[in-house]
Length: 515
Image (cartoon, rainbow, N blue to C red; front, side, top):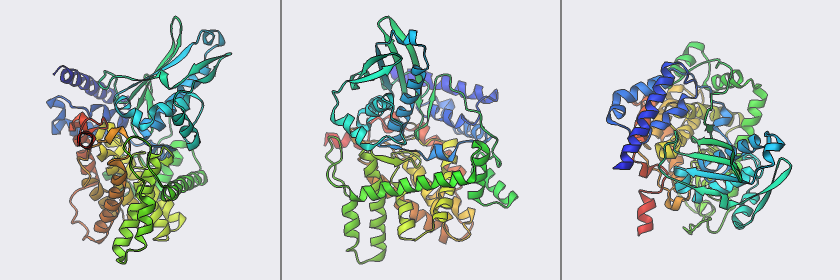
C-alpha cells in the first residue's frame, strides 16, 4: 500500500511537469521522451481516456526531429536500454571527469555507479554492469568488439587501472551497485555516477536510459537542430504532407534528415548501407552460432539448426516460414550473446527487422536501393511510435519493442512493392502493431532469451502476414489507423502493471522459475 502511494504521487508529479512544459511551449521535440514517465500506474484522473487523448494530442502538435541514426544504432546486446544507453552514459561521464582540472582530480579515489528501476532488477542478466565498465574504460557502443565484453564477463574479479588526470584509480565490477527498483527519479531506468574522494563526492551525474539506447540526464535539454523540411507529429499529418507535396515517403524522410541534421544525401545513404550491412552480419553470424547461450537458463541456440532443416521441408510456404523464423532468431541469438547488433527499434527486438531485411535480400532478391527505401519507410513508422508512445520495454512492455519492430518490418515489406502506396504501408504497420497490443515484457531470469528470442521470430512472421493482408485486402476495409493503434499502445503501456514491464516480476519470469 505504501509503495502504491509513492507510485501515485510520483506519477502525478510527472504529469504536472509534462503539462507545465507543454503549456509553456518548452517540451520541444523531446516530449516524446517525457511521455513514458507516465507509464507506471497513475491516478484514475490521469488514466481516463480523455486525459490520454490530451497527452497524445500534445505530443502530436510537436514535429518529429529524431535522426534516422538515433533510431537505428549499432552496439552490443542484449538490451539497448541496458547496454548501449548505459555505455553511452559512462562515455559521457568520463568525458565530464576528464574535463575537470588536475587539482580537483588529484583528490579522486574511486568511481561509484548506482542502478535503479529495471536496470537494477534485470541489469545483471542484461550485462548492464559490463557495458558500464566497458564505457568507463573508453569503449564505444559502435566499435566495442564482442571479444572485449566477453573478456570482462570471463574475468569478473579483475581490477582495472583507470587514468584520471595525472593519477590512476582502480575500477571494477564491484563498484557498480544494483540499487532500488522503486524510486523517485523521473525515469524508470536511472543511473547515478559519482567520482569520489575520501572527503565526499567530486562529481555526480544523473542519467536516464529512456529506451532504444537513448539517454538523457538531469538538466538535459533538447539539442538545437534544424527545422524539418516537412514537419509532422502523427500519421494523419504525414499522409497530408505526402499528398500535398506529391512526394514519396522515403524522400520525405531523407529531406527531413538533411534539414534536421545538416547531413548530405550521399552520407545518409552510406550510413544506411552500414546499418543494413550490420543487420545482415548479425543474421549471418547467428546462423553459424552453436551451443548454449550465456547465463543460467541453459538455452540452446537453434537458428542454424532451423535454417538447415528448412531445406528438407517440401512445402514451399512452410519452408519459407521456417527460414524467416531462423533469420529472426539468428539476430536475436546474437543479441543474447551480447554481440554487435542494430537496434530496430531496440536491442530486444533486434531479430525482427534484420530477419526481414535478410529475407528480402536473399529470397526476394531486392536491390540495395529497395532495401534503403524500405528502411526509410520503416523509420517513419518507428518515429511515430517513439514520438507518441514508447519503444522501451520498461515503460510500455514488449508491445513497445517487438510490436513496434513488427510494424516497422511490415511497413518495409509494403514499401518494397511497386508504387509502394502509403495506404498499404500504413495498413500493414497498423495490423502488425494491433496484434501485439498488451504484450508483456517478462524476461526469464532477466536474460533477453525467454521469451524474447522466439518473440522476434513471431514478430517477423506477424509482420509478413500483416503485409500480405494489407496488400490483398480491398482499399478502405481496414478501419484501424496507425494513429489509433499507437494511441492505444500508449494507454495500454501506461495501465500495465509494473510486474510486466521488464522487471522479471511477472509472467514467464515467475512461473517458469517456479516450475
